[in-house]
Image 1 (cartoon, rainbow, N blue to C red):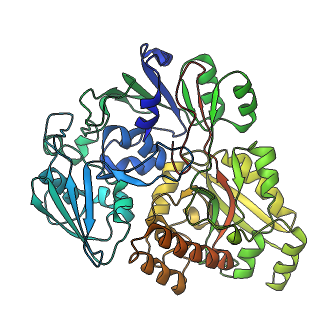
Image 2: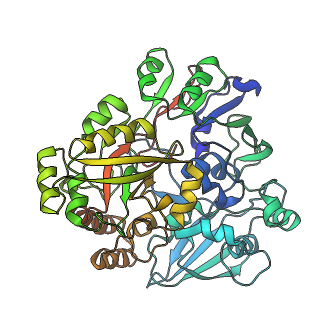
Image 3: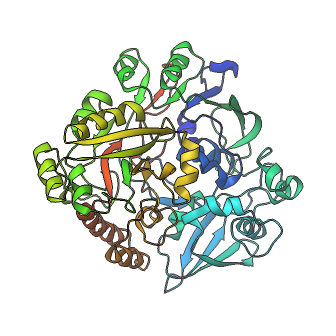
Length: 508
């Protein structure tokens, strides 16, 4: 997805970081470069996908990020087209011809099958359990896959799957030749895909270098080289931008946004299909009590957080759906700020004097904004209504490992984590009873039934209405403390000519 912005860059990207006159240097929020094997890049969240996976690899489908005022739709990538059968349990993909991997290996149905066998256990030697675990929602419903001919692939599913093309946008394909030569572990050190950039070098904890793929099937990028630098400290990221060491930073400290903008740096924001909540541990008291969960949603001053801490780089989340999601309905914004109401609700729930709780939260990472100041502000709001919160910081990648295994680190009472609905399957991942990533253990049969219904409906608008019904139920059940929706700020150097248009659902 980064390639969309890179394609809009002028031909004279600055030489920050010593990469040359046509090099783009990006400071990431991650503490290290993600694992470089296809889907394993999401071990650093969507930041790993947008800066690594989407540059080195392609999927069958991708998100269309060319319109900054529309929610991105799914468009062809390594598949030119697709067609479901009548009951949505089988999809036929026509593969794009004349595409090769960076090592010259042809892209075809055999390459697709080989990669899917890495994701899904069919008894082959190249099945990769770690890749299966990271593949998660995107592959869990696949029953089988078949080569119809050299450029036709059929995927059969365990049941109706109306939005399979959306979920496949993050299933990436590597060169079978390279994987066979290097093995599953070695491939991550020498990744080979079909994407707009080729891997050049990696220094763990320091930098990754990618060079443009002149033969990219969708047109060569306009910059010659991209250098990724993990700089988890936000102050250090801004310092690197100001000094010219980098020319793109993720998530500036909100206090620096006005001065950066006034000094000519390009500060890019947009509504974003992303939410920043606390996930309640519903296996533990008092969060097994709906009234307690709802009460806390009235205890926090979201607007003050947006104004004073985030400086307008986020929007208050008064419900479970960000404004950039097709399922957003204003009627589902059901929470507000009313400390007196909180105290009354807590008393009715049996906690007239409040209670103590622990919160596990990441200190940095993709989509987490400025988590320590934000959680400290929430800690103050909750203390005002008698709820004492102990903050327990954890490193982002370690938290993700626990979360996707369905656990809350340290068995804390709640987990703060940035989450997205960008792929439709995320709805069921976060809230479905049987989901392994439902760390809070929320369960509602009515919600599960609506998720099942959505899989049988092909029309996008009709599915969004179903998710809006889910959002209304979530507003009543309150399985999360919803806080803000990220506006996803990025800052580009003064000399970059990147487009200021950003897509509402884009992770860039």
